[in-house]
Image 1: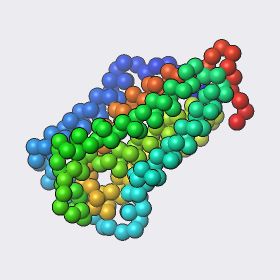
Image 2: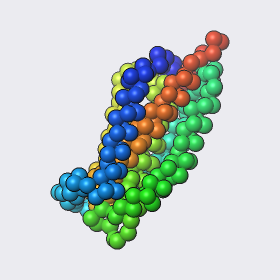
Image 3: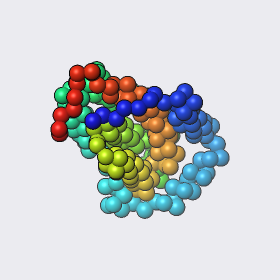
Image 4: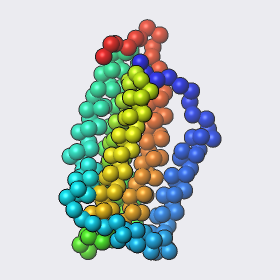
Length: 221
């Protein structure tokens, strides 16, 4: 049965959007202006740097070829459950999710070009690494999949486990990118902040569409 709940309070919603927006603006300003935070960023990166197969595998979880199929499966399952259950506008969360995933590069690429930051310590000369595209792909794909599936999990334990798995996957991707030297830590943090705002908007869409019609009932799947 889908989860039903009240809409988030304006103050809480402002917090969910405002804090990531402030952090993203701050890190972007530091990158563009060459602020003192970059020295800390580089020291942390070099302390964590250890390119190995494990860190590469973690980073690969942010590949489109890995993350997007996971999202597609979750999207198809959630759409089917919502349609069978007679959910109002059952098609809206899948469409909004797919649209967000498709439009993500259109948001990330201009930021990369505008900041023009060099890659991590293990990368060849070049720019366009801020914010991290792999981090953003993982955050939106795994985060959106979690938002789509949460309403259809019956137990609180299952919902908590799904959230934990999502968090572990995204932390693993970020750690792998920094550990292997693909990205600086600020590249990863910036993508997390940006995607937190995007997923908050998606959560509002998903939440408003989990109401069932008066005649709709959930199946036993």
